[in-house]
Length: 374
Image 1 (spheres, one colour):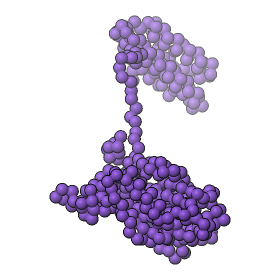
Image 2: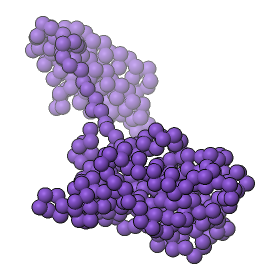
Image 3: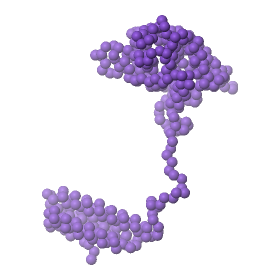
Image 4: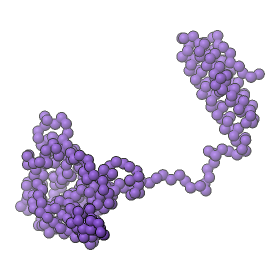
């Protein structure tokens, strides 16, 4: 005889247990009797149909009719029964599909002749790729890679690099200072580094000369974002210190590096400039590797070099003796050693190398743009 849900009159734990056991026993017996797809449909509708299925009747005759003090226990019991009923009906459906087809279901079959699911492989971001290329050139020249904190003190970012207190780079319009630093001494105040040059001082404090390091990293300045500016960008700097290092060593090193990066045909050109931490200072240009130095691309003007045939690529110079004074006790006596330093923007070089006209594209995370380098 088919099971029917009867209304409970006793809501004690023992009575609930007996009623539940009777229902689940009937469920198991009826599930065993399912032999065809038609049998399963009848079985499914009888137990889980929304209008008059056993589960619906259970909710009406047991839970809704239960006294207030018993509703919680009855509700837990009804939920347990519901989970069990749905599990049995689902398994019966799976078995009936096997009966109907005469074969195991596709989810159980592994076709070893099909190609496996391949995970998409990423690629280096164009700025990271450019940074790695630059670093690799100097590593082959014997330089070591040095790194330092992005959050720096005023001392390492400015004072130890020969930036006087009234230097424009200290202005809040250029530098992003950390809030809540007013109680600290000036040199102890924290900021987001405006260049990777603080790593030069930190390294000279821990390593005695001779020294050759290349410093990649992110820097921050309060620049409004546009096609050529970003408040966060990437730099690669270098420092070489030894006895008898001259400006000729600087020119030869950078000339070799630029030819390794842009091709052996490029020429280099140095123009006088000013940086607080180098003296003398220079800006280095390379002949435009896009138009070959002609200033024209066919009949059109060459925009990257502004028709001049030259592209400014980095700043450099001989380390100012005043900088060595801050690390003099670690072997950097300005009367005995000399050195040169240089720094370039990896983002700008990536723009030029890959023909991108908007630096913001590097930081927007658009997969359609980044996929070009996969």
